[in-house]
Image (tube, helix red, strand yellow):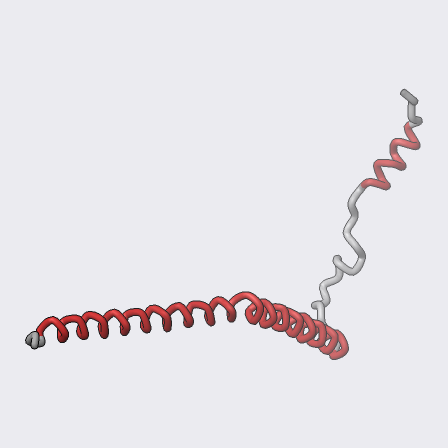
Length: 100
């Protein structure tokens, strides 16, 4: 281990010391310029547009096919129910007719 001189240790301690910035000590309020506001609005609209595009594309690729498939299954179930009702009513009508 190396022995440090006191002046080096003090210099290191001063280097590591956290001091507030000169601007932070001032009492004037923080304000945005029109250019800052425009830049933030532009970035916000850009990122909002990217997020909307990502959401819309994901919705089209993942959710719309699921909705279409569920609708097809619902139509098939309705068709099967209709066929069963026709078969049941047709079978009842045929058995109630008198034999010749």
